[in-house]
Length: 147
Image 1 (tube, helix red, strand yellow):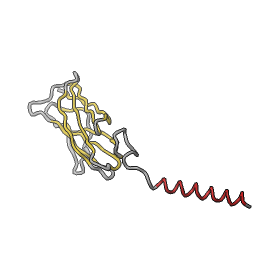
Image 2 (tube, helix red, strand yellow; image 1 turned 180 degrees about the vertical axis):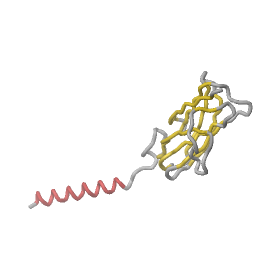
Image 3 (cartoon, helix red, strand yellow; image 1 turned 120 degrees about the vertical axis):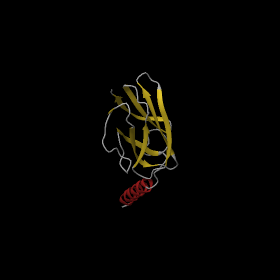
Image 4 (tube, one colour; image 1 turned 45 degrees about the vertical axis):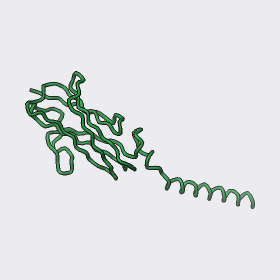
C-alpha cells in the first residue's frame, strides 16, 4: 500500500514539475540565433519594389544599374528588448557599398525593409547582402547587376 502511495506521489510531483517549467520559459534565451533575444531572421528577400506590408512585390536577384534594390527581412519571435538589424551590401571585390541599421522590437512575425540606390547607376557585377541580428550574421543573399 505504501509503495503504491509513494509511486502515485512521485507521478504527481513529476507532472506538476513539468507543468510549472513549461510556463517559465525565459524569452531572452528561447528561439535565438545566439543573439540573446527570442527573435530570429527567417527569410531574406530582394526585389525591385515593396508591398505595403514590407514584403517584396516581385522577387528578383538580377537588377539593372539604375534600379533601387529592396530587401525585405522576415523575423520570427518576440524580443524582450529592442534588437538591432543591420544590412551590409558589398560589391564582388569585398568593398562595402552601403551599411544601415534599424532597431526592431517584434512581438511575433515581422518584416523590416532596407534598400540601396545609386542615381548614376550601379557598376555591373555581383553584390552580397549580409544581414546581422544584434551583431551576429543571420544570413546572406546574392544579387547581380547586369548591363
